[in-house]
Length: 442
Image 1 (cartoon, rainbow, N blue to C red):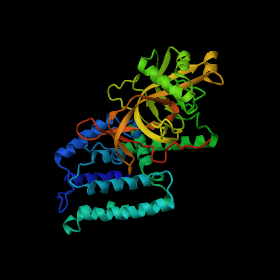
Image 2 (cartoon, one colour):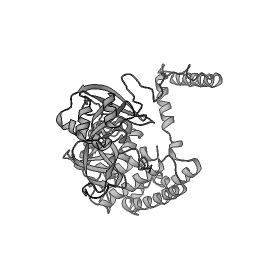
Image 3 (cartoon, rainbow, N blue to C red):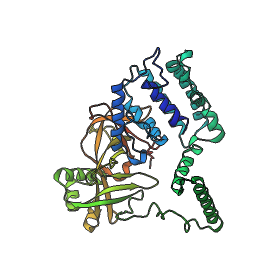
Image 4 (cartoon, one colour):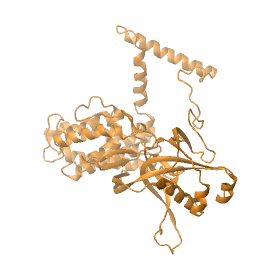
């Protein structure tokens, strides 16, 4: 926490912006001009509206004021925002690639599990990164020795710390800092603040011991009870056919227009292998829409853009990553279909619930009994480029509305402005490259 987010990253920014201990760029050209850094600061502030809360705190304009940025905020900026905001900003691409190498190493350090091969990659990776840092910033000049603080040397020992104590998230300072933050409201006397803090810590310790001795964790909890994840909260609805998600308010009954109706029928034709007229005959006339889906298993909460309007400082959580099977030979009608799982990104527009309870519909459509189908209508992003190293994808336009089963949605994603035009965006995914659906043969 302190090594990276509160030292290394702010120092790098100071080097790029010419504010590091009154040192110039020397023999290299890694600096960012004032106008470029101002644009990055503005884009950082704008991204607060398009990065869901689950990613981290909202950041302000760091070009104007960096003092309010916490370690948590610098973590968000480094891992997700900066790889997009710094793209094509340096005079030479080697400085950007050097920063990306750092981000890759940090993501590797933050993995839930780290293998022996990962550990060796971290060790060698930081050795190479520090050597390039010395070449670009220190430049082997005694007058530039201040660019080599002990925090840069400490990077060489991260692998040793992981080997001795485990992944860095197991012992970093975030829990202690948050505990200190919870102690601040306990100060009731400005003249004797330490007495108030001591009393609060003593009371918390006594309460913890009583909970442990008499198994009274729930009865003596100072927090409101949290219902189990799979229990529906106020306004939520669960369907037995969909054990992995729960739908929530707002909800509305609509009569779909012809375009949306045709999309629904086309989706069901592929899924149920029935003729369009058969599906049209048994399709419910009034279709219910929901405005929110909560993915179970510590998943995300995602909004449907058609019903949930963003107002004020509400952050956008309508963009998703979804995975569907696509026929590789869809354009070759005489070839047997061969399906492969592909990943897409888009904006969730509708959550459509289709109940089939009429006996005639159950028989005609081949159901075993009353069945509910929940479809997600997503406007896909037309990807124009991808940065596979960090799983970042760029788009500026949308494709045609696509409908599929709601269980194809994997997670919510964030968007970062790419360039000053405001038309191009980078899609960032916090779930990681390993959090992907697997296609298993029946």
